[in-house]
Image 1 (cartoon, rainbow, N blue to C red):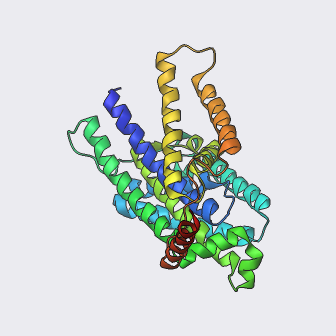
Image 2: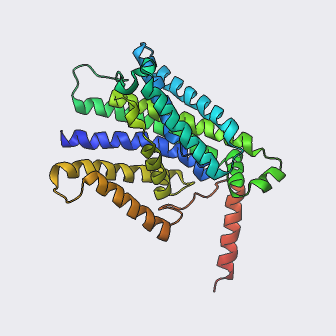
Image 3: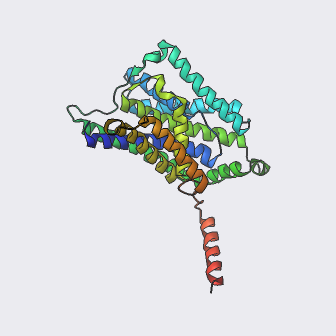
Length: 315
């Protein structure tokens, strides 16, 4: 494989999983939702895109449909689960994701079953080299990533985002102030699922083939590593975590070709992930980047006032 194409391929995957990481950061980092079924909504977006693209639907409508289908699925799943405690919520959503994968695997009429389904590329330049095709996909993926990032960034600094943080910190106090935690959590899960659906569609069209084995529960835990490593409730941290994990992941593939190790490089990758997570939780429990501060005019005035008092009191 052309080394430059390999690097560009890595950039594409960083962008795709950056979107998924942002979606989990919105749910867990800001709202405190333990969504251990993230792969389910990634799967829904990918298969929606694949099925519609086979029918000749334009790629942008396939992406929108994947986002809407994932959002509706996330909302419906949230209705019976959001009143559960966080640990039970995690178990239920994880189980839902695995049941959904097994249904698609067993039912060949849905999308090829265990054999999978071919997916046409969203934008393909006739006669272009592999480098050009990957560059076009980088533009598409990072355009979607920019939109998702701006949505989550603006939301986190809005009154809505401050309510989410309040519910995460003390849901009883938030409800005492008239905030309906179930409504806010359902909306957050729907929005996060929509973003995961967009990422699933981008993943499907870039790979040009999907099957149920690509959506194992380990994918969810990989996204959790991205968020915890980069820093929950920090959108830049979510992107940093996605970049680091993808570099580790692709690095293991390189190691298979160029290094002779006493242990399989893929197994070594998971060992390194485990060691890295232990070190982060011991020495940087908030992740590599701390939780982002709320940016409003009132908060800026409070910080300026605190700094002025500190400077005035210092010799």
